[in-house]
Amino acid sequence: MSTKSETLFNDAVQCIPGGVNSPVRAFRAVKRTPVFIDHAKGSHIYDVDGNEYVDYVCSWGPMILGHAYPSVVDAVKAACDNGLSYGAPTSKETVLANLILEAVPFMGKVRLVNSGTEAVMSAIRVARGYTKRDKIVKFRGNYHGHSDGLLVTAGSGLLTESNPDSAGVPKGYTATTLLADYNDVASVEALFNANKGEIAAVIVEPVSANMGVVPPKEGFLEFLRRITKDNGTLLIFDEVITGFRLAYGGASEYFGIQPDMITFGKIVGGGMPLAAYVGTDEIMEVVAPVGDVYQAGTLSGNPIAVTAGIEQLKALKADKDIYIRISEFASRLEQAYLEKGITVNRVGSLLSPFFTEANVNGYDDVLKCDTEKFAEYFKHMLDMGIYVAPSQFEAMFISDAHTKADLEKTIEAIKSF
Ligand code: HOZ
Image (cartoon, rainbow, N blue to C red; front, side):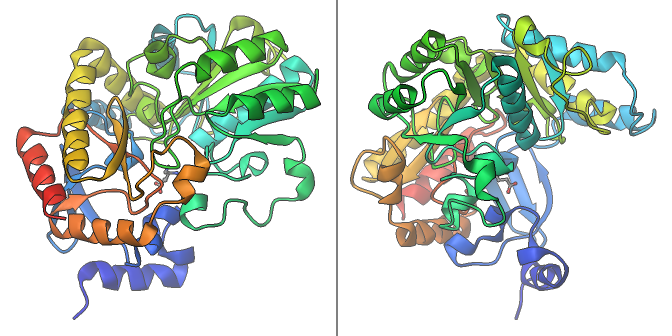
């Protein structure tokens, strides 16, 4: 007999490619079909068959306060009564922009967009417009959304589906994307030596979290700051995952490094489709309508999404101990994996168990992981009521709603694998 999820999935594949609106969700890497979600509250998510899970996907990061957080939901409901979209400015956009700038006070201006993909794509265009150079450096296994120029040896769904370069991207679109190895200083130096005065920006996930979690080696981000500054190149931190998660001020606060531009997504939208890119005043001067780098959007600064973002950031700002609590929770899980003999990487409240004996410091290490074993682990966790990302190459996200009981249940599941 089919489960309701299976029936819904069969219906979905008839009208949606692969039955899903984002590839990793299809569960193909773990050789299953997806569970369909009915609702979520706090740290728990419930499928249409009545199964309840402790949720470590947390919508891939945004739900840092847990699902259906009351102040966010109430504010969104109230905002809906005033209309869903105007395509004209509101005062709330300024409120959210200032909440973001409080996180990164060395930045000057914020532009709101709808997704992390859009934020990164726009930031790159700004960097090119500002420096009047074309080339960019990205790292193998880092994922910066699905814009053409960045779909080169990318992480997340591309790594999961073993197809790190997407079809449909003309060669010319990626000809200016130079590839370096994360945590490998020499690979970056070689690119700067071979492309003197031509590199507009280096874009990096300060903590790689789309090939599983891979922390930066000691000094790596400092090195990137130095070499970019020395070469008139902008350093862009893609903080779609780390922003407002490692600290209120994200990775730049956590590591004490000031990039030239930052992209935010996920948490900044409180669970709604909202993202942002920020830069110093001088850099952001090039953005239209002030400057000549064009970027626009009907739903940019959407009042409902902005409302959700404001309420979530206000809650985070009001209780910064949240970061201590979620990191502590993650470190207890880290311990449980280690005691089970499973390799694990953790930075703050982001972690990934890896099915490999070796340490995981970069893309090549990640590729050595046993994905069959991961699929077994995934099935075991799901059977035990624990919902983790259906891919070896994604992170586990802890929220402030996760409880002691969740922790104990999860440790039990890890122990019994
Ligand atoms: N790119 C996301 C993971 N890093 C997946 C998004 C989704 O499937 O919702």
